[in-house]
Length: 390
Image (cartoon, rainbow, N blue to C red; front, top):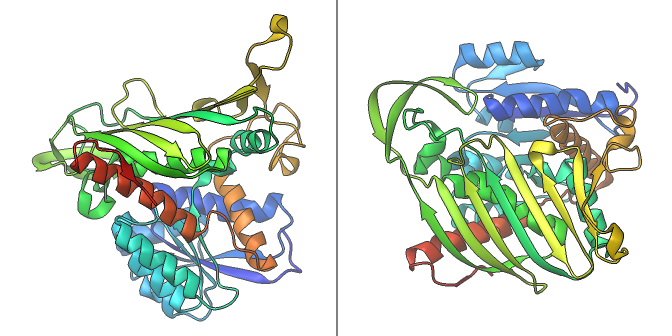
């Protein structure tokens, strides 16, 4: 930890599953990377006083509050980190930006296109040197960042086809409880926004191309579930009363990219046996790459220019110090995990703020992903008709 650099005082709004992940990022980043500012875990905000105090003690936050406006009103807060359900993102982020605070906001940016547009406008209108970033953390898995580098360097030639899927199975059981992620007023959408947003962002990040049109299908398999009694991670235990699921369980859509590539996308929380499989394969004119989050320290690479007798996917272990982010971590061959992406996110955000450079992905990029999600929903409403997203 560095003691001779300025402080960057952070308030985290929310303390559930993502609160733990972001806390890990803020705590660990300055201990492995030489950052130009020292992030201080100053304030943790949650609606339940006892719950937020317990979380703060566990994760290392100095103070607590039960109203997010406390983070906005305090002069000694520099960064507002938002990990609440999507329905509250716009109000908190806009207030924070108007107060001159940097904002990190979990994905998707908002629940609606209109909210995302307002957030992007607030970021554009924020004072000089005030920055906002969306938490598409999987960009910062070293193998995913390396995949981007390979594709951008021309290692697979002209990008032609993208196949992306984010597969989970935590809702297969029809008795899994009705959490906030299954309520449209809190989540905006189901698997489409929760998982599909990651698949869209990662596909665009790796290829450098934007999705400009989609044709989609949404489906809900279980329409009624037990009301949540006790939360635990993504899910929990249900009570005796039941409520209606108001979001999708599955999203399927095809997309066309502005660089000429075409893609297929799947997002589901009903894929039996798949726990957290974010998979992307990009096929080009001279090669291909393949990534799977369930095997996140490896990247598949196919070189179609190699002699026919030696062609085949090479399984690259992405743990060398020359790979993205790896120079600060362990010796070659020592694997990283899910939580490291949040450390890299904190690192990149702090470095961008101090350098005066817009951190990526920006709210404008988050808005662009929101336009794709909105295009899928509009396509579904029109019987899967082809729908422009720009």
